[in-house]
Length: 252
Ligand code: PGA
Image (cartoon, rainbow, N blue to C red; front, side, top):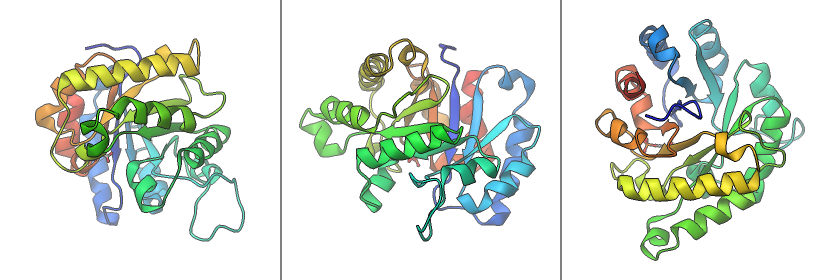
C-alpha cells in the first residue's frame, strides 16, 4: 500500500452521537497503538458541540479532532454558525468543507466552499474539501467534468500539501452501501491527482486524496489499495470504534 502521501483515515460523525458516544473515542485511542501510529493519521469529526470534550479525551492519543463545517468569516453576526478560528481555539486541527450534504442541504456552492477552505487555512486548520458526482452525472458520463469543475471552483488560494486534503465522495455511494469499482476509483483519483498538481504545482503530488462513500471494514483493503487513494473519509462506520479501527487496520 502506498505510504506517500501519508494516509489519513477520517471519521465524519455527521449529526450523530450524544455525549455518551464519546466513549467510542477511548476505545479508538486504545486500538491506535504505536504500530498503527507509524502508518496512518487518524481524525474524528464529531458534532461541533463535542469538540472540546473530544479534544481533552484524546489528549496524547495521536488522534486528531476536526469539525464538519465552518463559516467563511472569522466572526460576526451569523446566528448559529461557527468560525474557523473558534474551531482552532477549541483544539481541533481539521475541518471538512463542501461535504455533499452541506452542498445539498444548505445550497453551498463551490465558491462558498472555496471561501470556507481559505478561512480554515487562514486559521491554521487543514481543510478537507469534498467533491463528487451524483448518480445521474456518472451515468451520463459527466463524472470527471463535474468533479473537475468542483475542484477548480472550490480550490483555496495558496493550498499546500500540508494544508489541504481532497475527499472524493461519489454522492450515490454515501450511506447507500454502494461503491464504485476499484477501476473507477483509480481512474477518478488519477484524474484528481493530475488536477491537484495543476492547481498547486509542486504540492498536488503530495496532497492526500481520500476516498469516501460506504467505506466499511469489508471493502477497506480493496479501496485503500487503489493507486492515489491516500486514506478514507468514513461516515456510518466511524461511529463504532470496532468498525472504524478495523478500517484503519488495513494500514498496519
Ligand atoms: P458513509 O458516509 O461512509 O456513511 O457512506 C461517508 C461520508 O459522507 O463522508
